[in-house]
Length: 180
Image: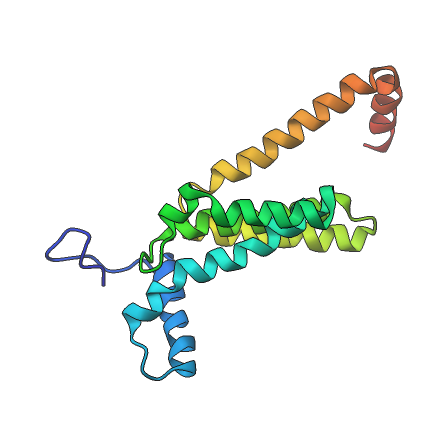
């Protein structure tokens, strides 16, 4: 029951809102490790843990393009970004941490799918990207901004390839018509 919305009466929590469930299961896990921890303490660790996990995809994305040193500095820049630190402080168990966590994992899965050579690996990583986007859509209503960003980047890439290979365009159109 959310007592902060329509206070003092409050409203029921939507079964489609993932955040209260994440905090509850985080509490159950942390209570298993330390029986003296209460719900407020466990929820206070939520943004810190999510930001800690967000460092990994940032490192691996940057490492893909610039090696270990680039990955290290990208992860360091994420951890030292004052705008992110201000929104994901310990004790502030709001949904802001999702807006770093999910886009970084989605982008990492997308990039790995893009550069994968085997079709099976491409399909699995594309499915992971879609599943992460689906989960992200449950946690934040503005999930479609990131989805649109990915689609826009793909559109720019297609236009770039068309301009770069405009001489081969009639061949490509002929091949598409033959296979359709």
